[in-house]
Length: 615
Picture 1 (cartoon, rainbow, N blue to C red):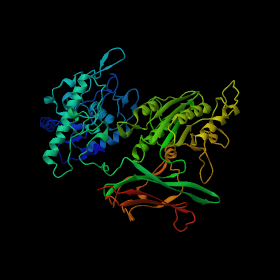
Picture 2: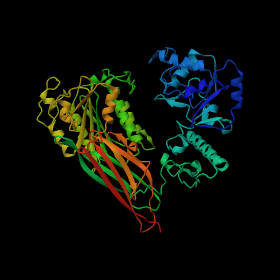
Picture 3: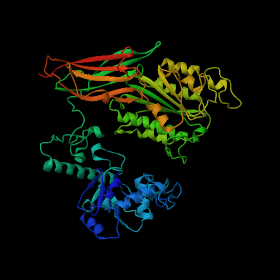
Picture 4: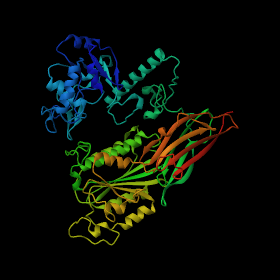
């Protein structure tokens, strides 16, 4: 936690600064003045408000902030944070610090403490000089230009570079290592951002030439806006950036032309029960190096990479109801906190974050279809799960739709199934089709296609509302694996009723299909649950018969599609022309996790051959 630095009382001042900050000039004058004034405790510049001016709806620039260390102050802030009330309308302790991004965390409460609870001890610095981000000081209220900060409308874009002490490289111009380029920026902002990027890359060149001894060379031959990025970018996004030390495999080891091999067997549970499981190994097709890239997966049949994932989320009026477990807060900003809809949205966000964290999953092999429903259903379209410019983040288009969802209406399962069927019908073929169907309620609106009769009054579990055999038949024809989740105690998962009729992925042990969850943690756990039964008691990768000692079962990543591994860089390849290399993956899976019995074990083994091509 960054605030812990306040306990470092063997220094006259502490400076909290992060990697998105570029210090252009010495700050000695500020430091000396701050340290020399016994009344001052804090020094910072202000962010712009996140909304049109509404009072104190802005926070401090947390990317560069100075404080005088005081362990007692640290403990006081921690204690008061846990006991101070926050009002949506009036802010922290009803004193007006409210309505900006980060207001519930350190940024928001520190702003309250520095300006309200312990006011009169702050050294407020110029945003244009000590936190310039090159952004437009005006926004629009729909009819005219409005100053974003009614206390200071200085246009920092006109501040000469010679006057700027600190640049903030994140919100407007973007981090340099993400090679961001936005043609929609106005001319003044674009010019400032270009100058900021040139300053940052000039600092990198200066470091490499002055301090970078015997490090990997930078060729500076990237042609993506080379006048701005100085040859360090080959294209937009972090993948286009030439890193000083690349923590990914080098281009020569990760061939873009892949080959797959698979071994499939049935894990026996006893009493005629079992699960078809597959080990897939992916490598390049040839090699010209002593190292190579490998990746792969261990999955249940019909859960193999790549994926079309349909997500259906219930927005009926009952989703306004409270939900248990860890508080989610007001996830979608509708003014209601910790309700069922908040939990549904948070669980879907967690699923996308899992995709972002799994190196084997990406926009290239995961396709998302989103449907929401109440009295009627809406198919929102197909989405890549991740931001195309930053694969560590959720696709902002998908996230914006989720955050705009609101509760209201009845519960129309039939229409929801119709709409998600449209997604699978138009989605890429030759993929595993997975469906997550989330509902807190009971169907009460009749559909069409199964000789349904209209109802004079919407009624829960009326036989007409449970007639969606034609929709299920369409999904069966597309081999859609369907997980139905009852969100909350009011959901109905009884056999033969709404959610149970949708689910076709029964528990391998109990045979129970739809599952009911009553806490936020349980809901997220169900969405991220690994469908592969048993325990992987051994995992190994060999290159030309020699085990890679650093790769074992602990390197497998568990998730809602099974286990994934890699991308690993393996050693021991023979690159010379005429040599044939063999990479082998082996996994032993035991149903009960005990090595004492072997009748409930399978060992999956598969290999790829890579000829050497180096002359």
